Amino acid sequence: MHFEEFFTVEGLVVLLLFIATVVGILSQRSRVPYPVGLVLAGLLLAPFEQLPVIENLHISFGPELILGLLVPPLVFEAAFHLKLDDLKRNFKTIAILAIPGVALTTLIVGGLVSATTGLSLPAAMLFGTMVAATDPVAVMLLFRTMGVPKRLRVLLEGESLFNDGTAIVIFNIVLAIVLEGGMFDWSNILTEFSIVGEVGILIGVMLGLLVSLLISRITLPVIEATLTTVLAYGAYSLAELIGVSGVLAVVAAGVVGGNIGRSRMAPTTDIVVSNLWEFAAFIANSFVFLAIGLEVELLNFSAHLQAIFWALIAILAARLVVVFGLTWVEPTPGSWRRVMFWGGLRGAISLALLLSLPQIEGRAQIQSMTFGVVLFTLLVQGVTMRRLVEREKLPKQRTQQEEEYERRHARLVAARAAYDHLDKSNKQGQLSEYTWSTIAPILRQNLMAMTNSLVRLVTLAPEVQAEELDTAWREKLRAERAAYTSLLADGVITEDTFIQLVADVDSRLSRPQTGWTDLISPRTTSSSDKIQLIIAIVQEKDAENAEEALNSLGLPTNRMESKGEYLNIQNVTLMISVSEKQLEMALRVLETTCVHRVEYPRAQATFLNFLPWLARTQVTVGGATLFFLDIEHYEDF
Image 1 (cartoon, one colour):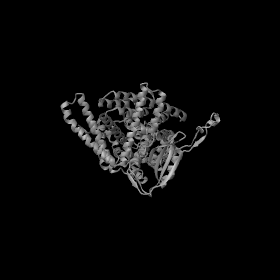
Image 2 (cartoon, rainbow, N blue to C red):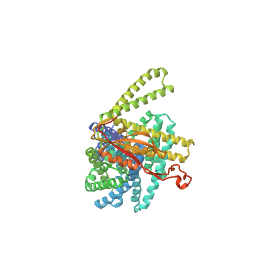
Image 3 (tube, rainbow, N blue to C red):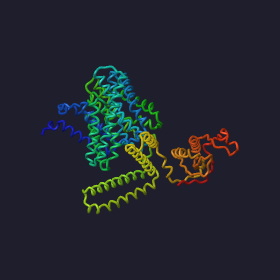
Image 4 (cartoon, rainbow, N blue to C red):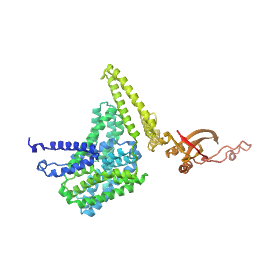
């Protein structure tokens, strides 16, 4: 076989996959984020694009190949793992970053690049849409090892997922204008974006619900995994066929399938499906990053260094405006904003759009600027992110107990899944009764030992126990929500009642952690810490609100039902121990949660009670009665 004969398109694909595998191994050993390794490998491949054997292949990366084949797994994998509860709690910020944020980035980048590089405004706007989508894969890998706050991770992941869809929709709209030589009519662009976006999301939700229903009726992991593949590519194809956003359809389908369909999968099926989409995303990422090396001409790249510089300035300026200007809708710490600003990396989606870009005026410059932006964000921002996170003191490294809990918990879950699988095989006749009766006691004994080991660890680590309690509490609320849905479907409750009950559950799910650590952490503090005991006699109507507010601020309370009452209003006694710094905060909470009320009790029995204006007396009932006791020694168990 001659060397040239090997270089068919199939041979090139095999070679690229082999290179991706080598890069993955080297990245794991060197602890360099995998996307960084891929972009370096793609850069090293650039000179080979000029080889005759490569040129003779006449490789053409059309929009159908890139957007239709490679983008769905990239988007679906991220959407499939996004928790719906996390999305609901942070939806306002994510939506603003993903929709107005992408539009603002496009305008700022397009305007600055056009003004500084000489690129026409339509072409510059097109470039702005290509780099508007963030891809913080490298950052998220780092965050998981450093214990960065979960909400910050959700904000970056959610923004990335939804601005992928938004950016691709705007890219297609602007590209059509550029190819047709038309003018920018922002009202038409906004209208078209709304239609293609909303209908695309609706299609994704409907298909996601349909596939979730099918998954609930099937018990074969391979078939369920195939259904998720049909869901991802089917949502994209159907939406594009209708003329709406295929990418947003995939996003919606992934979120629905990952939350509703996934909850109906067996543990073994969940593992199969998760591995399938992790593999698919790996292949798509690898191909995009390496294929770009065969598209970029190094001579053109070096000739556009000044344009790349201005593109970077425009990208950083736009990111600064978006992050610090649009995250005011929900309280976001300044340190989080700085991390979100520097963590706005560009990656596979930007390169995928670049590969799908047809021949237009300024294509070589757009190509160089896009690749330059991706290089800078991954090699500079991605590599320096650890230092920024440490400087901002966002997380504390996970404790050894937390890491050990994670390992033991994972082993226990896997062992239970294995036991359930074998038990099911025995009941279906696939495993003999003799074999099952022999192995089952051993498996149960192992499960008991692993459970006891986990319990011992949890009792010694309050922070782990708090996290587990919070997870259990949220699972309890989700179960309540599912029960209400079943009651509505069976006609037991009306739709109005259902809406009220579900709204209450959703409200409780959207609240932050309930402060379990303060309730379960054994600690002893000196009198210089806890200085006063507040005994608050409050009305029963206010007790629950006061307790919840105090606990959420780390001020655990002891509640005692009081025998006393006034004007037929039951009282409750709350005992709150506070430090000097916490005293004012506790008083403010009690003041806002314990309200004054006007009551109209009957006057004392007199011969005038028959007169209506003397039968009742107006009395103002105070919100709370407080007593303060000094603390000499304090212990909390």
